[in-house]
Length: 408
Image (cartoon, rainbow, N blue to C red; front, side, top):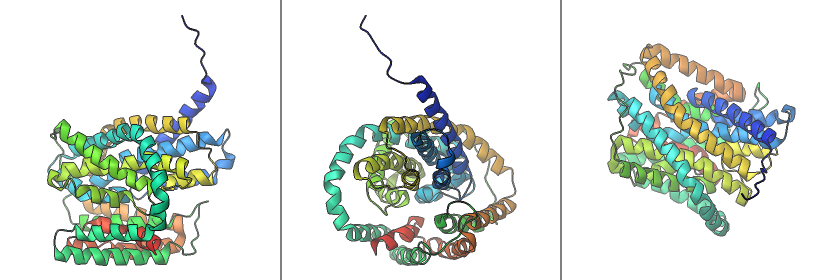
């Protein structure tokens, strides 16, 4: 027999697994709580990293695992409560259609397949895509304002009629104004970190849907779990979502919501199931590609990676990739297990009381993370968030809150 030497440190491996498990728990909480994001927990970890015993790479593994699991589970409140994470905004309403039809459990499984498939595809694509972006990025960076303006124009141009296009322009302009007003505002927080985006995203994407749901009938009974979409079609949708997620991972200012909206232009004929698979694939693929973008370009593209940089986490790629893979496996299992129970529980509650309770919780979260300025931002964003449904426009145009300030 050939001599084989075990080079892995069992103790270090055990600590890494514990860190990943902790990150999975944090990502589960942030994914299931409407208005909360994995970025928030990551920033809190960054602020307290000095008090955490052991090397910083384990803190980074926990942050990354939380971010990946969040991209799996944020579909659950998006379907059950109508409060999508901004990354899921493009597919939230099509997903609601499936819930209304009693196919919410199928939608959960489609989302899990889309996210898990994105990780499987992104892993082998990460190296060649990163190599290409290293060459292309200097040219893109020098014309970034033009790139972002082109994306905004494409969002408008792909609306279905003239009225929706007008709404898209208004939505981009109004949300962009919010970004210019609040992103650089002086904000205080009762926590070690400040996050004005919690208030802005909760108002733009969550509050308008909740206000509309007060007079609704709530979540109907959900039936079977069988996925009706053919495997080949699912594979194509996952591929489209993964490639669009790569764009988000390497270019600043382009969110998962924007990339998902662009991807849906390629899958518009697939109906709500295509929306769910593609959006979930974009959301999760972004987390993978953004890690490699940080390693290659030295610039964080997501809130989780910003927190890792603040915490001075060393970029030990094998440990971080391991965290991504383990978290993806856990997320794929947790979506149907927890999602089915979530839908069933929400279906038993009074929709008016539930919506008002979640609205109050979002307001409190806005104050916790951004003080009274955050509460004001939440209120203003709620008003702006009503523009898209008034014109029949896609909610992803509200991502002007980031696109416009960065382009300017």
